[in-house]
Length: 570
Image (cartoon, rainbow, N blue to C red; front, side):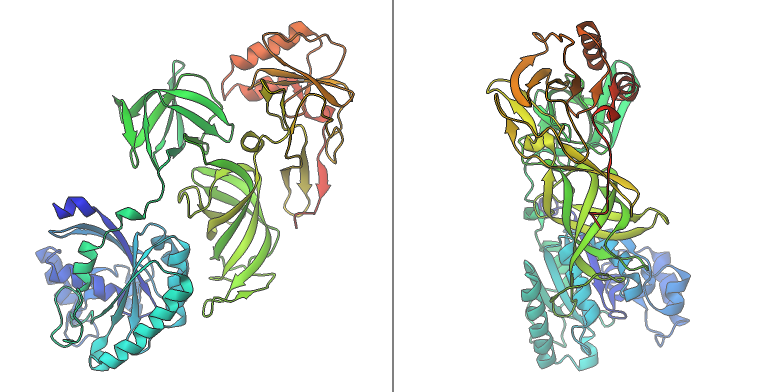
């Protein structure tokens, strides 16, 4: 009963080099009889040829690489699945050496709980602090500080009290939510799976009992539905399904959903789990969703409902830098956030964090394994949220565009420059009709990163009689023009730089006397009302694959726009 109630526990072991992480997990597997007989025999034989004096070397159950056995340290992340009568577990045994901090961060990104080992003879070290800080950065909320090698300090209660004080100070500094401190010996087995006779002064649970009973199910604060789209399924022209895993909430047929970053709405027509149609689906299920109308959705977009999620062009994030080459402002990279991969530039290092003290240090560079607060400018708005609110939409990695190596991992702390679809930027309204537009968005070419960025400069809506900012650094519009906003099916008439009227497409007729642009400020190449209606008709009949050709036929970027050359982001 209890096993099904508290569910699977994903946890990580970390700490400094040679703190006994692999030995600890190996001992749990061995004592709980969770290895096969031939594995047990092989372990006993391998231990005899090692340097343990004939005793069983439990770390050999996890350190599988030849280099790990030769050096006596963990290099790669070793994942193990095991189950006891009370619970199922997935554990990531991670390396302690500073050189492999990148690997440790990978393990932390999947875990609900962290077991941080502390050598009783050395206390809390710099690497212990770094790993605790990284676990906090990755959103882990439950911590077990396993004070290991108590046998080397003669099971001293006073020494345990000293280390407990160090851990409590670190926990307060990092604002750790749930902390358990257990004295043990991974080699001798004290307080690992059975209570220790050598430490009668400790009356708490053993490590295994605590792991079997800790409840991490209440950690998820995400309730509203959202699903990052991994793939658009088009087996034939009659079916268009959006595939992905539901990250939060639930979905049922008939629900009204919103697609981001386009901001379009539609009703759920059907839901498939595998090849089986169902009426509803919940968090954690991979699904295929079909909608009742065509919407602008591709890989990297997000389907949501209930509001609260938006697309943004700039992120402020906490980064763990893992590249050998130091980070400097102006670093050109790719951001992988959710299912979206997009060019970006790290425009600012606001401050680095001292691993020992937590002090904020002003700096222009960040070396390997450093942690810093940085500003990341995206090439276009991406659906994101604060990591503390939506985990999947708030965690990301930076990829070096030259080497294609992961250069950093980070979490979103703040968001800026909400997309026009979400903020109603540069939108027109007469109180009844509304037309979203990006006419006043600036396009910058950054000479250092070789990327084109766009930044919204107008944050208001324009009503009847309002004057528009018709001149900018990268755009210049005539005083009189018509704007046709295709997705809203609304035309906006601008006369003498003021909003004169909003007209639905059903009533709109183009008289051919003024220039015409679309909602993004691109010149429309239609010369009369017949051609305008043809353009609208072809747009409404198009799909994602045919849109580029359609826009190439009917639109011209350079008529009223240009790219402004700037190094302002560096």
